[in-house]
Image (cartoon, rainbow, N blue to C red; front, side, top):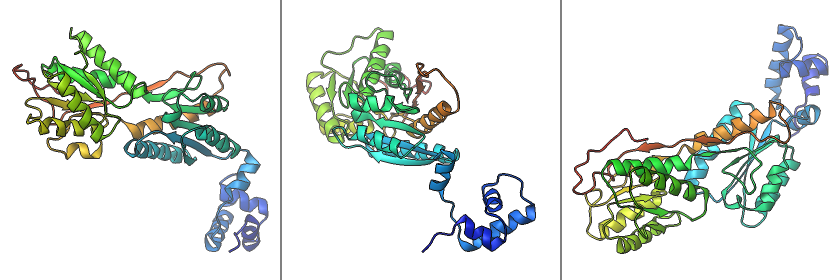
Length: 348
């Protein structure tokens, strides 16, 4: 079916092409009655604006690119929702892409740029250390990353992971726990390093020495958390609390503790991170740290659009923006055995 053009609208409404264009774009001076007639004709004929032609004329595509990798669906989905909602609210169209291993993220950045997107949100966590991807992002006039990239040089919007680790650890300390171990996702990633640093901050401020061999990797899965918890329980038999760096690993740790005939939280408290949908429905319901992934996506778009609306020296980089997580207290954390501590809801 042939597309209805502006010239078709103008001919049917008996006006000039220029008048039809002004009426449908809401620009210029057009008599109210004439504007109403043109809009009625456009609706009757099923007119759809040609955004490609408009972009060529205005050199403004009103589109944003998004490149992601290395994130689970429970992270990526709300992050994308945040990007989409904020972009749409500002009149922009989002083009979402997912990068495969290798140099695919670099190619996606260049392909989006060739399609004249006005800016790119880079959320390729699996490629954050890739020099080619980092160089491609840095070459763009306007870009924002979720988490830092190799070599920096691009404004980043991310979670204050150090604060995340700190509030989780402080919550356990206020419950009287002194032997707190960790199950991390994947060593040397942004979440691991930040949350581990916050954990150490919390222990140091309370005068607690981290337990020897009190850390193990669960690689972000429930099965990994189950196995990591089993190994730590063998190495640190007197532990009273486990801080797992995501909820899936925490759920696996709950099963490992129960399988050894221990109780959660009476014998061992467990706290997760992310606040996935399942967290409130497991037994016992999981205490966790809620990460605002949707807000993170929206903040990245706002930071990106802020760049396009202001003049700044080419050598300057806007400061990073850090969003903070929130502690969600449920039933997998309680007083350390024998401590007599009372649960606190004022941690942070």
